[in-house]
Image (cartoon, rainbow, N blue to C red; front, side):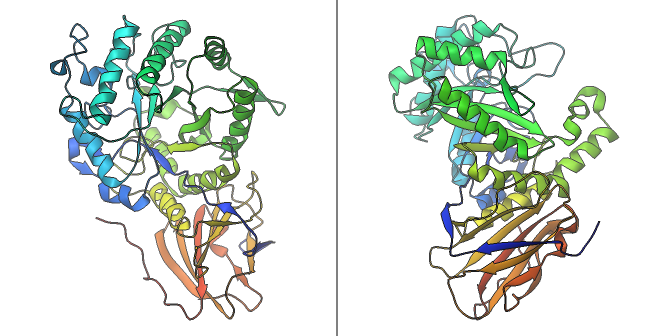
Length: 469
């Protein structure tokens, strides 16, 4: 691969375009192994805009799932003694302490086991809805020695089309459960936002045209015809092509609008890199070296470049929230099983640093095969930043040309790098050429680059940025 610049990328900082959107939400909170691994300091560093709760029971707490809180369905949902809130209280308290808002998924965690234990349709949907309302009262209104967390988003189940791993019933049984629960919540709390169905499969593109899946079409038709509340529509995507997120987001937005849901938010609330579009390494038959290599690519430099590319491409996509899966230690996580940050964490840290210069600069669109770029200015016009990611290993490495900066005189740059050898360290500093040029040979491999720009007279930052222990 060529290591010399073969393209010119000009960024005019006098042309701004709104704000950089904080779409770096995540799934799952900082407590793992019942608190033996606590990632709270790292979560605070990212200043997460939203934490979604799903699959908490896998390597964390026996918490959050309805069956973890209300263990005997024969009990009376009106009695506080019917609930076991303690573990979930502690789990949510750790998230709240990091400053992140919460999206609470009401339902159960996925079961890849041959026998299914808890992903069955509730025998009494009305009673199940009463239990969900009691959980809301506990965490938002202080009921049963509870809290006032002001959780705004409440999601009803997860991937009910993913049968039988997430739902052993029929589509119609899920539609009924959704309707009963959504109506119950909205009748008590009209200002809360209810949604779902957190679809894993939304449809396929054929010859450039999006064909929605049958479950999705039937669900939207059901909600429209029966006027069932749908404040947010949630969907998932795991892929080897980060350009697919924005393309799919546009297609789903058009579908929602056409079906009468123009005011319904769109949440991409599970996403990650899926090497080779292959799920087999995570299944039982994939355990061992194959799974280890699969996770290493997902969490390594290529996964980091993927994550940064996706976050930049979503800036112009019609999504209201996005949640990476996950911000903890299980498969797909940003951390290994000992709580050590992986390359994907540092990609998110680079994006978080970009948000310190939130006034977005007009940049070329993110195009599959190219280097992705996003840039911004701080409100005081004293700092600027440029974030770049080379996921596709483009041969046309850009020579960056910067103009229109809000200060005169020489400009200093500090380059922070995420690649196979660097964990968001400052690896290079200097001054832009008089014509604003700087070459970026760092992008010759899967990598994420953050350039911090300032007047040459400004004090430099630390030579390395270390994460909290």
